[in-house]
Length: 68
Image 1 (cartoon, rainbow, N blue to C red):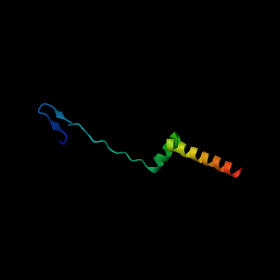
Image 2: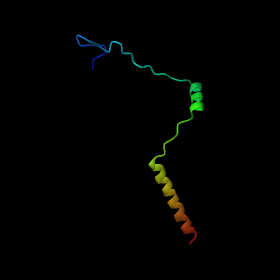
Image 3: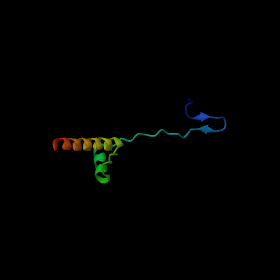
Image 4: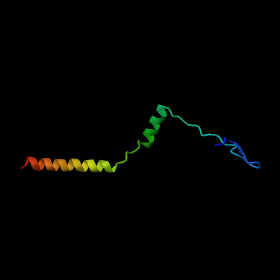
């Protein structure tokens, strides 16, 4: 891969390109942002519902077995 700037003969491609800088926030800034915006909500996956259904079925079966 060719490095920037790339010269085509007529046009200099990427001559004003500046790589983006990574911004790192302090712990205080993240705490303030979380307090103002709120923490992100966790997604509920289909596996969660499947395991919840399995637990419910197991409880029903156990109750049926105990009350025989």
